[in-house]
Length: 261
Image 1 (cartoon, rainbow, N blue to C red):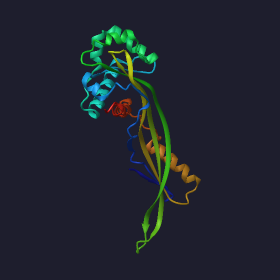
Image 2 (spheres, rainbow, N blue to C red):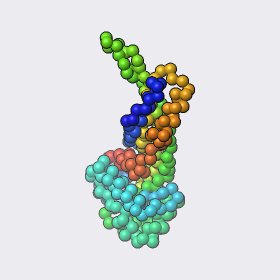
Image 3 (cartoon, rainbow, N blue to C red):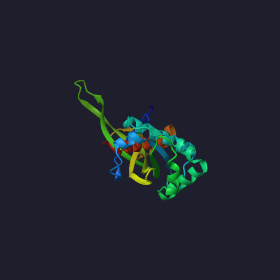
Image 4 (tube, rainbow, N blue to C red):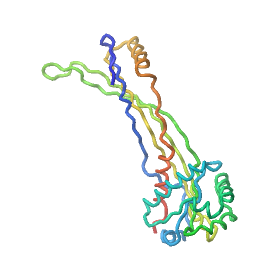
């Protein structure tokens, strides 16, 4: 931390650039539609597989799709330890790259998997139920807030405060929000047996602190701003959290929303 003074009029404190990461509570499934025959017992007996993870209008880069697919499996198996989940690469291999690519594009654009592709999905070994996830939104927003606190900087011989300063905290926050729609298909019947959506947010923030004496005038304020920008550089919003971190919360909520009986 650097302190700069000007004739006792003010002190400028570079806010140790406190970085924080904040997550909301586990999100809940919205708009849930579930077939009564799709139960925890049916999942344990027949198995799950990740069919695809897509963007809102088209397939994701394969590396991203595979990464998010692994994150989805990790969250399901941590929350529901008795469920077996096959990776999307196994689905791709069973269908062949060309047919798989067409199916993923169809789901990304229309939110459905046609009967033609569902027939092909019957060949996925050990997985009757296929999970499809579409990232419908991924947005980044900025905000800032200010709080203040009186700090005693000098006391008399009896310990009574004789001088205080105001510590002002300016928090610059970057928030990432995402929403994901899910569909689970039963490859033996060709029907959707579970559908719903979840959304979540994660934030990063930087705290900048100013410490000033009471009674400062306009020139003091101007000088403080000039010194701050020269010595510390302009105040900036932090980078957003990675999308993967937001998806982890969403996938956890999805896992908790799967049938429990």
